[in-house]
Amino acid sequence: MSPVLAAHDVTVTFGHGGRARTVLHSVGLDLDRGRTLGLVGESGSGKSTLARAMIGLTRPRSGRILLDGEDVTALRGRRLTGLRRRVQLIPQDPYGSLNPRMTVGEAVAEAIEPRRGGLRRHGDAVARWLETVALDASAATRYPHEFSGGQRQRIAIARALAVEPEVVIADEVTSALDCSVQAEVLNLLVDLRARLGLTMLFISHDLAVVRHVSDEVAVMRHGRIVERSARDELFERPRHPYTRLLLDSVPDAVRPPAAT
Ligand SMILES: Nc1ncnc2c1ncn2[C@@H]1O[C@H](COP(=O)(O)OP(=O)(O)O)[C@@H](O)[C@H]1O
Ligand SMILES: [Mg+2]
Image (cartoon, rainbow, N blue to C red; front, side, top):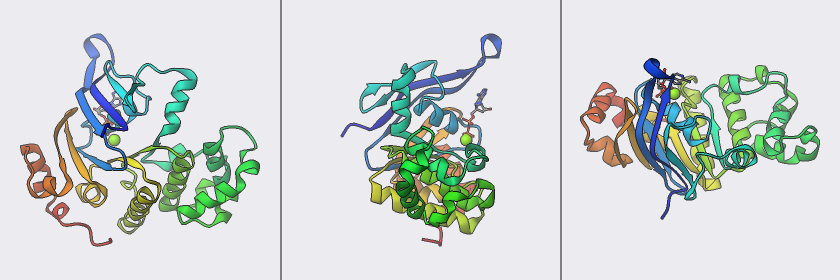
């Protein structure tokens, strides 16, 4: 089966001349349809940079991003917007990505149709999406600051899914949340992924969280993928010394979290 979204030999360099710094080195990563690939690695290893390259926000210096086999690396304008709709990013910090002056309903409506007055046209759909992420429909008329961190992450999820993407990239979506809320948001994602048949790249530095949601896991270190294995294989029989090091540093990751 061909992957929905793939990075081929992607190299990303920031800065120029003597200050140039290569953050991704010929990274290859395939996302198989309907599956969730976890991506782990310590902070600064290049996970978010890879996510941004895969949604077209960061241009690789070399290599290609393929969506259904089509090279999207050089897309511009309307075709890039099309790509952005098919591949949605759920950000780490929903507060930063939600406009504080927009009601939650307006924010979700904007994701459905980026034109003014969307909430009038799409009110029913907005209410359905809020319900899908277990928020009351009355949330539509309120502002982001009126919600807790976990609720804001649900709003960000509703917003990403309202676009009806094929691929969702979730980048540290639970990292800023308290433990109990983390489990709620994770379980919601797992449930929605199954219901909507999503393909997902689930990025986290937290091994236990990745174990909970992923079918397969890739390990990134210093801008390179060092290992990719089926989930249980990776946690029970890690092959790369760096994977073993990561697992040894958090023995609890080998046990699935209690809240399932
Ligand atoms: N826009 C940028 N300009 C310069 N350096 C960047 C930029 N974005 C990320 N980096 C650097 O690239 C490296 C990888 O960052 P990042 O992809 O955010 O890692 P991770 O998500 O795994 O923590 C870090 O050293 C970071 O400082
Ligand atoms: Mg990151």
